[in-house]
Picture 1 (cartoon, rainbow, N blue to C red):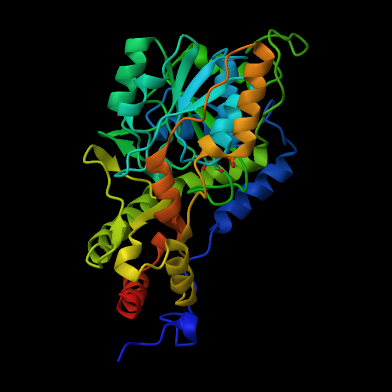
Picture 2: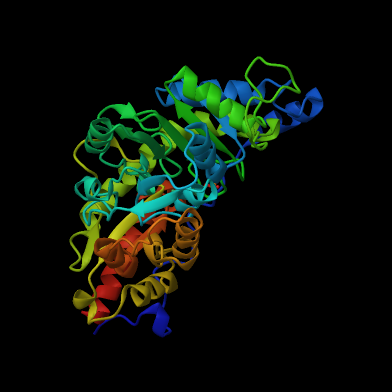
Length: 403
Ligand SMILES: Cc1ncc(COP(=O)(O)O)c(C=O)c1O
């Protein structure tokens, strides 16, 4: 007889919580107290932000880091530094957090959405060139869930068409593409240190680059348009204040010391889940590209097939799994190409500039992933092998009940 599911009142596979996030020790407490007692709380005079910029950049094989308030700001800073402005176009992915596209719209540029690949859920390079117009200025790939986008193909297309590449690595701390860390594989790259991210200070962001020129331009945008080394009340450009505070950097410096070990732990648990879960019909873990040296697994991702579960939709499977004690959920609900805020603002910009209107970019693969893509957060992958076995046991239990 099949086991009664927890969602129907049966006993859940587990009630114990998975590891909590964020994690900290006395080292963060000490760093915060030392910063407090130093009496230097802002980056202009302090040492924490500067040290973090250097340490985070060095860890990511990048020459320069410019810290800022959050990942959304980091994206805007890159676009402003690059001079991307009203009516320009930026090609990006429809399957990402809204901040990626919002950053374009907030500087007056129009995001164009190239569909994703069903195997990686990242920007499909095959879809990019058809969207390039004389107004295109940059490609903005996202390393979704910590899996690097195909940077070889993207950088080749950008070089052919004279476009910039700005990486959204907000979910990809420490991820490696062909032996090199992401973030400075293109012209500039952005990271977020928001609460859920693989290292965090609650909020925070950074831009990485190998170019001294881009670094200086980003620094200027972060610092109200001042010139690096210039006078305090001399402003060489129009910009806002996006500076990171010393507290955040003090905490992030400590968090960074754990990143490598935690990334390897997540990857080892993900490798176990990839094998074990793919034995269950209808569950297809997203495998890394063979050129990915290390996936950061900010999200563990699976494509669900309702037919294998008696036609029940992915959301229902996720609810059943949560009842069994497994934190799994559907991901982004709709392609950004269809999000009302984005469609409306894109239309508004075109209208203001007298540009012809454009139908939303078709993104059928993204629609599939929105309907059937399941996520588990990175903190789950910090658990023990027994924790991972519970995930597989729960998935098998639901399959046995519904297949
Ligand atoms: C892909 C992506 N881009 C941008 C952001 C924006 O970062 P933040 O929340 O730090 O503004 C996030 C995360 O929140 C993200 O996941």
